[in-house]
Length: 135
Image (cartoon, rainbow, N blue to C red; front, side, top):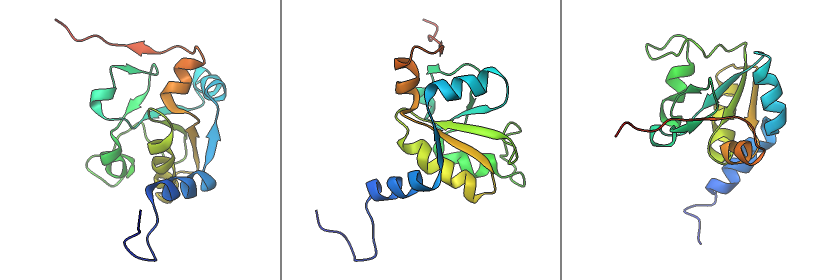
């Protein structure tokens, strides 16, 4: 596929650049940090994906992240403290890599991406919550 111009990069390249600049943690490492209360899990998936999630996760869709993370924004989420440990996750770790880099850019100093995302978390046999819609 031809690029639009010589300065552009692909989405894959953008994700790889983000991954090179952020910390990644395994599901087990994330579980240990979350279990001790030393970290906040940030689920940046879309609301339609939230039926299953890590217990206690803060849920902010990727499209609203910058506003939820900015303490000066009217849409700021109180659970997002720039000095706190934040472990970001999505389904597979791709969107979360971009989100983690965004948080770093916004001044968050202890951010990590959950390697493999929620899929890897479940595959590791770690606990998660499932909500069923009322019928």
